[in-house]
Length: 294
Image 1 (spheres, helix red, strand yellow):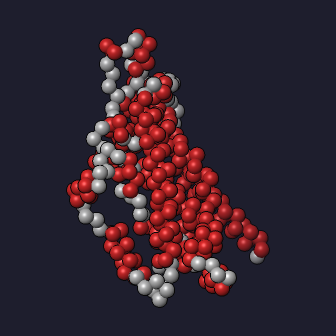
Image 2 (cartoon, one colour; image 1 turned 180 degrees about the horizontal axis):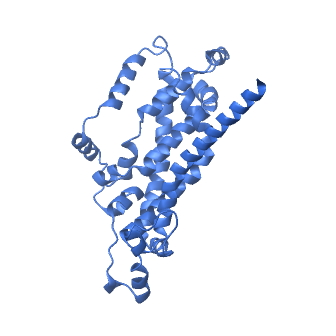
Image 3 (cartoon, one colour; image 1 turned 90 degrees about the vertical axis):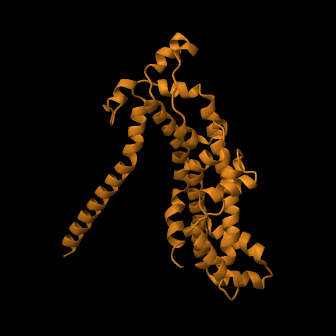
């Protein structure tokens, strides 16, 4: 009997391992394919001959990017957007989630605010009213338009609110008996204990601000103000041999929009691939505990 259970357990573990490997490959293959395209020459990429390994290995795309000043300008605009957006969103979400984690007896407007948040999450005023509002606030060609445009993610508020609601009430009651006020309870008790869910919403916010491209296409009138993803989405390679030396012409002849954009996309993925492992250990715990109660 024990042997049969052990064999069944090993079989189940093997199936789980196989499924996890397949899921891992599904996630890694697109990244590897993008890298292979970026390292391939123009003919192989255009003919669709590239899959798992580069054809006609060349680093011309990356060499070209190193000389593309606008790429790095857009890269640092995206970094600014992530830093400002994550800081503002973190602060606003925490301040809104804490009072909403209380009951309607403790915080009377709770239910009304929750209905407004849910309504705002499901419906919006449309693109034109949004643009006119941002224009009236002076957010055109301004990084704050990109930062404040998504400064209050309602889904993140709900995650943090539910996480805080699951925390033992006895801790807050003990702190109140010791004379702690709401600010001290929030910063001294809730904040340290809510690290998993706060790390989770930090991942969500970083990914959103780094990958979002449409807002800049609407709010920015000049390419110089584009964040990285908008720049990659909008800009194509223009090869003008009359403005290049012989070496540059030779290098650009091996490139295409496909290979160069693949290199840009791969470079744009690297920051998230570096950041995510440091926050991943909090991710599952934060999103699970943050979605228990409604």
